[in-house]
Length: 270
Image 1 (tube, one colour):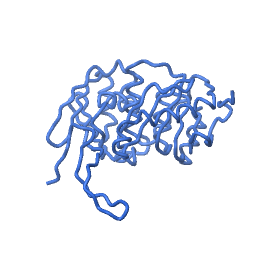
Image 2 (spheres, helix red, strand yellow):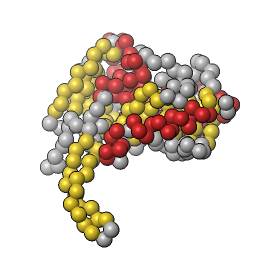
Image 3 (cartoon, rainbow, N blue to C red):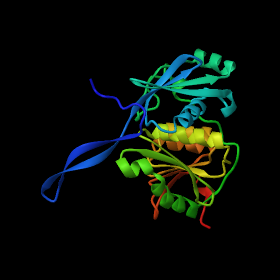
Image 4 (cartoon, helix red, strand yellow):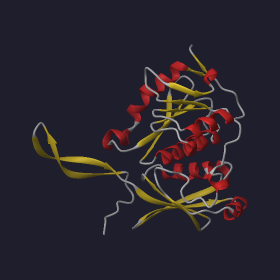
């Protein structure tokens, strides 16, 4: 039986390290991934593999990103219960939203690589975001400033080298929030939840340390944020959806270079 570490984000392990022709004993930090069950009004909805921190943010962000609730106020309470085989997040939502959830209920096999696994039909899987309501422009220098700052705030990544991060960056490049997880989708859901709880404005943008897939674009746009900056590549579908919904999409983001894939006119050199 494999031992499960359910309620901590990282653990330490004695390892053997080969360096300069010698093998030495040392300690290594490992990111932990834990099964996290999202349960709505007593009914299990999804199980995701996630990092056991900021889980209330995760529950709220997942609920918003998946369209289970339309606003933070429709999620009345979250109770975290640690079990021997994982963590349960018991979410109490508005009765109207729960009835809608039951109508389109799906069971997800939580994976860090694909957020569509387990959807019952194509309409459920491909929930295209609505057109962003507010036109926004961004300074090119703010992207560079945000990229310079985010690494210092990735505490788990510094210790383990195994986590993704999503950060909310203000219009001037100041990083306001960072959330980390073994899964890129989970990190973004945690950030969306934190944004909703703190009621921050949506004049800034999001940086993700991963590639920009369709679902990363969908989650960003659904949160009302006008730009997604990814350190890796976007997919073709992500670019087309970003173009359609008015999201500025940036990929291959580095301090000295990045590629703008949609709505390039929204980025100003000032």
